[in-house]
Length: 306
Ligand SMILES: [Zn+2]
Image 1 (cartoon, rainbow, N blue to C red):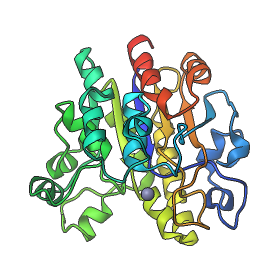
Image 2 (image 1 turned 180 degrees about the vertical axis):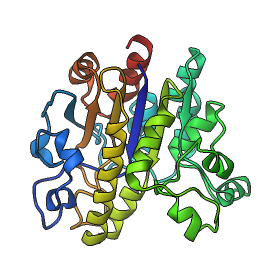
Image 3 (image 1 turned 90 degrees about the vertical axis):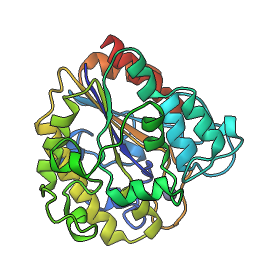
């Protein structure tokens, strides 16, 4: 069984309040199809359909304060309670102790060590590597974990050759903001299909969508709703091209944020874990997934025993 981890930064499960929660405000048909007609709010937790289930995961992990990206993502990737290990929720970028925990082993390195193929499907522009190399920029926990596992981050060349996807899915940002005029353009639906095709090349793959967290910090409801509709089209393309009887898609997050635009800060809400795939994989998720800490061991089990 192949596993695609679609990681959405800063997406929690909030109340059905259309004033503050963009997930409650707009219809998202592809997402709702996986939620038995419900919207992605608290009330949908526990919902099952013939191909999917939604669970609510604790992101607080028994540590005071609001969850942050570096410790949350490192927990998702290691199965260890990183905020407790580090002594606090920390982010957005990993500090030395988070790095140390990722270096000791993470999903990418464990799977590679067992002879499995793994990939981070995001493409990174040349400026990103330049800033990393000059020390002006730190990688996020996801990219750091991949690098520590010996994976090369995908580049512009990989994007142009159809081996990776851009963070905005369509490539528009690469053309218009980064100046890569030759970037292939996808519709959101096509990008979802491309994501499914790329995931078929590996036992485990991860795509990181970080714009969701940025939208949460910006508190712009119209922009948030517009992006959710785009994301829903990506999901439509992904599902159309996915073999749900054989392979698993896991969509989850590191902490809440976007689901409450009344605050620019992260939230203490649980995060959604939406699983699409065969009944056995979903049953295992239902038994095992309670917090961010349970994600990595479950993915290992899916890949190894699925
Ligand atoms: Zn944030």
